[in-house]
Length: 215
Image (cartoon, rainbow, N blue to C red; front, side, top):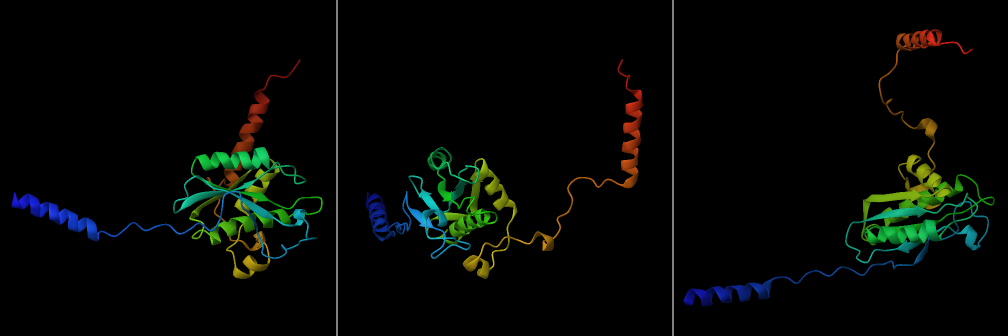
């Protein structure tokens, strides 16, 4: 009996000294919030109208835990308009249902703006998410970009044209890389020698001779 009482007192005392669970800090962004990509005029801006200001619209899942994956969404529209509903909001809501934070990009459009302005807006959106990853509970190693139609072209271009992200590029420009100075990547697949190509050509000629002529 004394052992049972002593054991009960031990559990009670341990429960009293156990630390309280830490509360998460208040999230600095809100669902539905629109954030400009630059605090001032965007590089290459030709005015101060809405069409001259690239922004991202925030779509958050119901629960924002630490290291939430995120995606930048680029709606299509032929680089002259944006399908912000069915290629922006609706897709963002679906990603939210999977626990992914979505940021719909309103990039600048033609004919007023031309390449590389749109690419710079997409790159800036990715960098904005990475730079605020800790405050916004995002995982900086799991930030993607996707799009549809022209937005898909833009997402692909941003995913394949990148640079180290120098400080001066972050603050003043786009950082479109100079591909001429980029290190060459090794070729994928077997390297074909001249003799191999000659054999392929000879085999092709032989196959053509064996064909039955048309009547």
